[in-house]
Image (cartoon, rainbow, N blue to C red; front, side):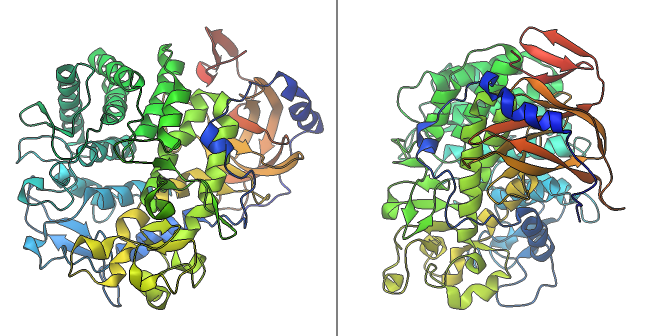
Length: 579
């Protein structure tokens, strides 16, 4: 347990934070986020870290008892790599999947990769014991000749999880997930050459596309852009940019940097919102990061608006939802702003945090906006879980025990899309699309394993503080392949008065720097170990009313230097936009 008395910020530093706000970086507004509540009501943020660890423990249990459990099975088909693979159901009771169906080889990378990445972010090494990290190699489709990660081990064998004839984001996002996992397990066998192969495919594709991403998908085997009945998804450029930039940071190949820039320029040049599923927020992150690190001038605000504002054309209304439904704030969840009057999805909400939170590290002018979105999203995300939403606000309360407290509904809807529940549910309604996927799926397939598998993204980023409504957000948790950096956290205060916030910090003696004010707010702060097994202690930081602190925890007494707009301490950048 963290103890509150072992640490303190000196009084002068506390006063300094409040007084110095007149010189703070001007905060930029994101219109969609401006519409969200400052303090969503009712306010309760659950412990996502504990939930993620509980999910891992229960879902990866081969001996789990109960209807539709266990949720894992062995796929011994040896597709792509000659090794057995642990597969996970997409939804509880998903009749399309399982050891007895199609040789057990239909399962989704979105579930397996999401769960591995999420577990890793909350401190679980998924390469120890059964090497679940190494098993992910089977999603690298070399037998089909695509030589990139895909959502199924053999998409050519069926539609399940491979993109519905084809769907570009299904082919791009597994590679985004792979690079996130690769950053955490850089020494995993075969990952280096696989990462190179993916980068080469994406680089070559970007050259062929030459700034025009208006296609339904890209054939990475024959290296041809393709159009189909599915509308164009030009936000695939965000995924290309993300992968290529990470490849550049890993391998140092300038071609990948140039490809990342070209892809992002193609995205920035669009005049119609291209947001389709999960990739657009990575465009905003890449804009902020390359502006900071490469001196580019991409329009971060435009990218954020595309990702959030619900004006998407292809997938009509896709973005962040805003609203109070029957006295319950649902703002911040991500999905369709028009279906059923609004229909948010858990996976999309969790995954939005991956790029948006570290964006603040590279552009602190969005600290207030991103902090506000994070609070709203974290508050609303619990409503997808049957144990955290009202009995009449869900379609299957009577069968909620099957979730074992770790599997959520796929979506949260303003009004239910199921006729049989319209008379028994109250807005908002937690429900799922599973029964619509096939006539043989049971009603419990509304409980989404694949969406719930991504809980570790929230769990690895979000830590509660002593003030309900002020979160400690880890800006490095999902800032993969970053340069050397010191621990960095975002604290946003939605209240009309300043708040003294207890912040969990690594033990040691530190100076504390705030990128919003561009100044140190404490010197030689001693952080004691809080308990024998806890490497964190607690410091108290005052966060101004309706303001933010972006806290960089630096070594005490380090040497400050300046390089352009960058402020460095001991050669490590602590502020990319220093005054």
